[in-house]
Image (cartoon, rainbow, N blue to C red; front, side, top):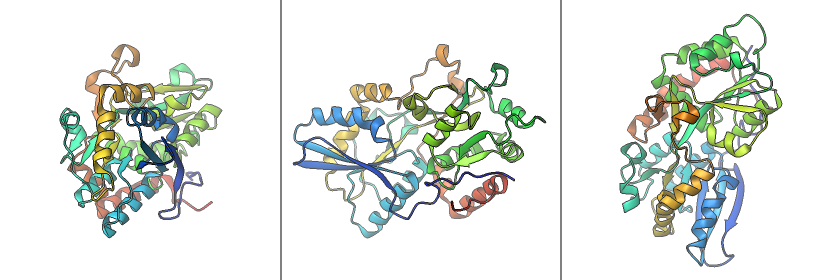
Length: 343
């Protein structure tokens, strides 16, 4: 039977999963409230650079899990009492639904006009980053001939008769992780292999868990040998030992984290200024150094441009939030991974 890792983040109390809070800038004066799924340490250089260029402005930065951030933002939209000046989330399908529900403030600028069509929707949601969904593996324990460079390679490993990879392949739990759900949904649209992957996960006793940090640490320690669809920026920032990274050559999904200014935000002009800074050459350079913007380099990654699959920020993602389709999708997932249980 598939083992599903019981983790603290698996079932969070509604609207109570704020993970961290940090102030950037002076203790007094105007303060922007930014709620985000991005680890504070990763986004800190960009926040500090913006503050340095805007004396007297501070940023109160709250780090949240994607599902709880979405629930809180939706609740504040319903009551028309937004507290956040900007919401910045990797679960862009949730962000598209928020915009579609009238929860966003429009904003236009020279910077936003320069975005490609797949990274902007209705002048209310903007894709700021460019991050790959990757396969990671333990470089000590996975022999070179077993390293999966495509989903077909991964399927071959999971079909083996030997027990080497039994219970030692990991991926996100799509029930607990909004990002995991988004990647799985994008796979289901993109790949003829999706059904076979679910069967392979079931056959190999794969582990589904909520969190990037837990998955990466598990691969580094050897508890897992391979992990699928992990956000590459978190792998880069973790600097974990013995972790190799593969961008699948059949196709690699690329995520652009969504930035939204809530309708009725206290400081919409400043929130727009922060967005413009993040999209500026300086901001993008900082995000590149932080691992949140991946530059295409076929010589380094061996990934041709034709294999890149951006997750477009557009109404197609509303299908992922449709209640009936979501329930059916999760049912397929649970049939492969088993029903989660409380720790």
